[in-house]
Image 1 (cartoon, one colour):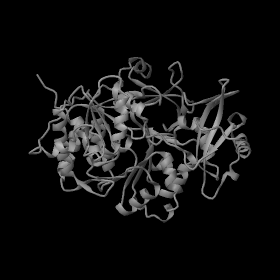
Image 2 (image 1 turned 90 degrees about the vertical axis):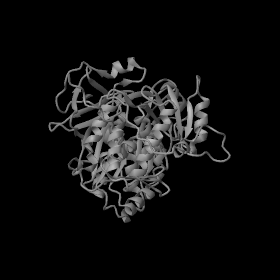
Image 3 (image 1 turned 180 degrees about the horizontal axis):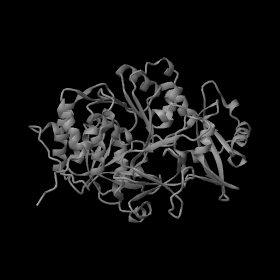
Image 4 (image 1 turned 60 degrees about the horizontal axis):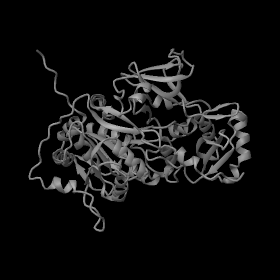
Length: 523
């Protein structure tokens, strides 16, 4: 009787990579201190032993509230090595929402960055049931009230570094990633160990030859964390920034000879618009991966001309992991007046474009994007009703509207529900945003619907003027004429809001819920 080979989790893959060269720099903290591969590995094993002693194990949930710091990476790896699932919390999310997320995930242990002790207390105050245990990632400020034991101190107190064997099984959740909605409890996507380990085993970031050097300047709770995993498995180094600052990013790329960046499109635009961009040496960059929200064809053409053949666009969802990739060839001749492709399906991914009755549609005809792959979610945490709506017959119904061309490239039109219903038809925000980004006086635009007291919707636009332009170039009558000329009267806005920057959600997407609450401007 044959037995199945033992399962190797993604953490064990990563620890094996760290062990191959323990003296190499693995992570550089925002303060400049460097953590070697050997030290990071030892920290993960020590943390896993301590966390297991505090109840972390298979079937348990540990939530982590932290800014970008090496200990946040180590804590996530340790939680998963101990067999527990992890919930990564976004710094900047409202405490009420954080509380609902943590409580709904049945969190038994909460790990807290000492810098966020006030947020942690507000989070815990929102609990309606028993509170989880709390441990901190280092000592709290001297004037702060206690929260719980110091995990780092407990690790340092161990007489030796233990070797903790992974206990996770292929079908276990490594993560519950919350997505969608800013009211109520966001949907919790259950992400299993097996497909994530398989994805990391491919180590695409190591394909260029030299070990990658990643600058993680967005939250480790989102894609920057996964990019960090890929980098460490490939034998590379992760350089951490606390948050995104375009001038600081450009300076670090030049100084640290960064090879890889992960950015959401609005952040990529801010790099292009920074006054220091043209004078910064960016020759070390070999790959800029972007995704997370729609990209503007005019701005991406600008980016391709400025950065060269290093742009890779990823389209994916938490429900299906990575789906497609657009490589340098797809950025070689971007038409500013046409949609931007998100590329072709990644290996192991099957795409279908279907109408509401489930019939496959021919190339060029838009419909809902359906995805089948090993990366499909196990389901929504405690929401079998939502799971049944999205995961049917092995296919993830993405809620995105798109079409395939005859070469198999996918083009996204919009999300099924991200439309503005105006008198006479529907306005697709992404189409209008593409047009606005082609306007020479506009650096960044976000389009959204605002509901009036009589339940109709109006088109509102938030705009950031391009360098050298002002409000005089972006009056409502001028923009209405421009939009009506190119898209028709249906798309003409009722109001525009001129801002210094488009507000972003904690993961870096335009925060359209916040924008909808802006005061109505005087025409």
